[in-house]
Amino acid sequence: MSKQIHTLSKDIYKVLDATSDHEPNSDLAAKYAMNIGGEMAKSTLKRDKPRERGKLWASDLGKPCMRQHWYNFNMPEAGDVLEGHTKFKFLYGSVLEEAVLYMAEEAGHEVRDPQFRVEVDVERENGIDWVVSGRIDAVIDGVLIDVKSTSTYGFQRYKYGIDSTNDSFGYLYQLGFYNEFAPESLERGSETGFVWIDKQNGYIQYTPASTPDKETLLERARDIATSVEYIKATRVPRGYAPEPYGKSGNESLPISCSYCAYKKECWKDSNGGQGLRTFAYNHKPIHFTTIKREPKVQEITK
Image: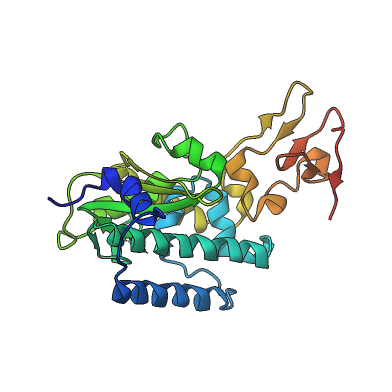
């Protein structure tokens, strides 16, 4: 009887059990070792090319802030420089993805069509078409999946499922794009979902997911294209509003906004024209748009 994706983590842990008599497939290991080597080499490449108008990535659809898209295409130089430690974080995310797919196969699960390209034309009323494209992670046991590595906090947030209430980074839109627009040649069942990796503690969990429908995805793509074509960023609405921080009257950026590379430029009118003010709280930096009571922690001025 073939394996089912719902036992994925249990089966992987069993293969890794120190008392297991599992005999590894050396050819399979060599294949994934080559994939990992490719990711390592790719991570060192220079990434300074501007975004090409008319082309969106599947991951773009998960970003609801239209002003962020405007900056991406029209003023990329305003964004934070992608530092080495951030690129390394992306690299080991890619390595963990390959490790999970390898272990899934070693554990007897069927892994098909890794990096299968999905692409769709987005027609618009003004006649200017855009293209959305991306590559799936894989189909495991007939289920289209996306692999996400996350912190322990994020793993706890998602391990019982993901929906619109906790999808802070638009993961459902990206997966939905693959699910809705993958051709029939990509054989799979009706279920789709995520494989989560706790990159700190090594836990793995699969959760099924319900994703946006085709028209919702196309509408998001059209909205992005329209926003990008405005002359000024200020013509494009922000996707997020500041949130109260405690009972002080201070307001800070919500989590999704705080991760944006363009937050300093976008919020330069905050704090009476001073721009964002950032303070080093124990758990993470907090970016304030309004300060009525000075925080009692160190301000990050650099």
